[in-house]
Length: 111
Length: 111
Image (cartoon, rainbow over all chains, first blue to last red; front, side, top):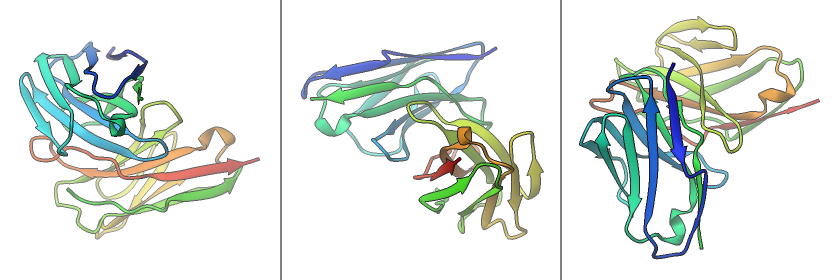
């Protein structure tokens, strides 16, 4: 069966510090991968999606970047965090245009 | 991206049927309609998906009129554990457009 992992589960970082969130998927090959952000009490905002290694599409201009160094690894990064980067970050995978399966999420607080 | 419009919130009581309607006037021919459920501090979970007419599974029913410009998620006999945010999405093949989430409908079930 397929499993999706995210870490860390929670993170508190000062403004201006770098960020690296990792997401890995097990049990499937060539999945579509997604990064979402959810601010408190808000809906999910799609940040990035990837249909293959090295292929990243960005949905909104922002302070973040994403990379897919391996088929089942998706990394969300920032060189300098802003206060507005605080939120709940969710990684998801899907097989082509089928339903998306979400990871447990990372709660990021930027102080 | 096809935009969706849902009520911000709804209230219900245990044992009642709940119908949540979503408008998607700009749905494309090859788009299908998907509903997700999200509990606090968790990633969304797939509920049901359809293209036209009616789809039913063990959790819910999805009604889609002939013009496909709206859809209705029907939850039979809700319980307290159905209190969650429900998202309506329209989307097509991820090569052109990824599924994105709107603000969702916050359903509160009272005893």
